[in-house]
Each structure stands twice: as structure tokens, then as C-alpha cells.
Length: 115
Image (tube, rainbow, N blue to C red):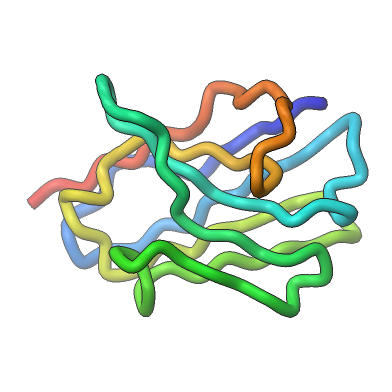
């Protein structure tokens, strides 16, 4: 299984980014999917999750109302729309099954929010 996250970059506070995750080697649509983030020296934390059909979503409290997770099962992809970004959202973002099932996390995509 390979998970390729993309779409990160440098953005000013209040800006937006859209992250994408392309899965290969697995039918991602049969799994609940999630986005996670990790800062250097810290544990990886859950950000958002979406059910296999896309009909159920859930978020960590700090991103509720600002982030939106979605998926395109036909393309085996999952997205994270991030709005009203804050400096504390600066992290490397990863996608994976939720809960994780042992797949390699990949390189992630770096999001940097400047104040």
C-alpha cells in the first residue's frame, strides 16, 4: 500500500489549502480514512476522519468549522480542505486508514502557516 499526500505549502494565517491523498495498492473506499498531523518531536495526532461512503465525518475539536474532509472513491483519493488556517496548524500532514491498520505513512505533506 502506498499513500501519497500532496497539496501542502506556505500560506498566511487566514488562508486556505486543499490537501489530497492518493492511495495505491488498496481499495481505499473499503476503509474509513483519516488525516493526521505531526510536528517535530511530537506524537502524530488525529485531525479528521471520513466513513467509507463519505456519509460520516468527524474532526478533532481544534479544526471543527475550519477543515472539511471528503473522498472520491472512484479515484481512490481523500481530500482535506483547510480554511481559516492558523499558525498552530503548521505540521506535516499524513493520510491513512482510521484507525491506522499498519500501512506505511509515507512522506506526508508540509503545511506552514505564517502569522
